[in-house]
Amino acid sequence: MAEHILFLTGKLAEKQLRRTIEDMAPEFEYTVHVLGITVAALMTADMIKRRLTDTFGADRILVPGRCRGDLEALSQELGIPVERGPKELNDLPEFFGKARKRPDLSRYELLIFGEVVEAPHIDVPAIIRRAEAYRRDGADVIDLGCLPATPFPHLADAIKALKSEGFLVSVDSLDPENLLLAGRAGADFLLSLNEETLWIADEVASTPVLISTPHADLDSLDRVIAKMQAKGRPFIVDPILDPIHFGFTDSIVRYHEVRRRHPDVEIMMGVGNLTELTHADTAGMNAMLLGICSELHVRHILATQVSKHACKAIKEADLARRIMLAAWESNRLPKHIDDGLMALHERAPFPLSLAEIQELQAAIRDPSFRIMITAEGMHIFNRDGIWSDNDPFALYPHLGVENDGGHAFYLGVELARAQIAQELGKRYAQDQPLTWGIHGRIAEEAPADPNCYTPQGTTLKASPR
Image 1: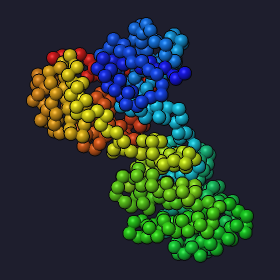
Image 2: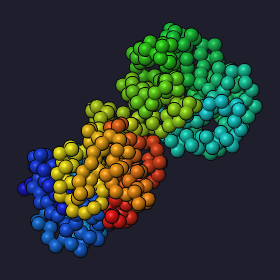
Image 3: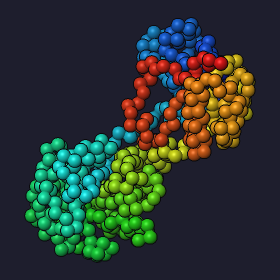
Image 4: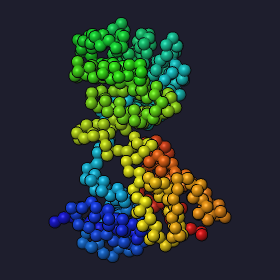
């Protein structure tokens, strides 16, 4: 027997909900029930407990995604599972397509080396603070970046302090004295040893990261690999990623060739030469580069956050490695797994068409303003009409809030959000801040607990007009 689902909704969303479910052609049976409320987003667990007198023989109940309250207690009270659906009604088809098994993003294989650039100029407490921030963003190893011909008198102290705080530590230098000192101070990794400095690996226990000299000479890299394999020691090789117009494409080919020649060696990619040296948003670059890493089984990257535009590179790489592993293990494209790397645009920015918004406006009987967006522009409406434009200033004369400063301020904020979302192609939900993937304030705060009650949004309160 097919599963029977009871959908609870409000008066304004009933018709759209019925149409959405019908278009899904679901295999389950269903009942749509209006709970005696106009706006579905105002539904709470306590309200359902008071007002729902019949479960219509359903096997489970689906409530709007913004429904607040303890649904587990409600399920026990009703004797039937009660679950939250998506926050946006038009996301319902995708919700049912993914509800049975969501990708596991708790796992990753690739390690992120977060480089503390110009470490010689930073004192030990500042290095520790930077390391803690990198660890929160997802770095597994803290890399101390040395500078040419620059003394680093507190190198050993910095390594010991980091180790005492539980960090894995690498040191990045071409100076043999720095590398030798770092190894003796307890560094876990040394970047980078070549044919001339490979002897350092015999003096310390640190795992070396090997490069060729010059860096495009794969035969040189083959020789250092052979020597380390003969020693039976662990190592990582770095074919070196070059910046765009300075060998970038050739370096990608070089990574492929190293993997072809050495199917089992550990490889590192220094992604900073692309993220730092290209003025473009880094989330997409990290996704692409970690996709290459996933295909070539590159399990170490060196990430930097020096340039202001690359200030979230480690956090982006952390999510990208989880997405790519989930996609690879399930033999699927890295789509519909997580939207955290989509900061500027969204997959479905306009859930309703203009015709559907006009239909919704015709059903409204109160003076409170609603704001929605479509590809055509912004739309603000209440029982008195609907006004549309791409310029929020053009909408102001229609609102009648000249003598209501608080309401005017609120509508100005919401229309500004709507304009940004409409121009970029982002999802806009009234009374909710815009989301920016893993970036921005919302991503850095603890996610809202839907089991706790929060005050209703300003627009859902009665208008003073």
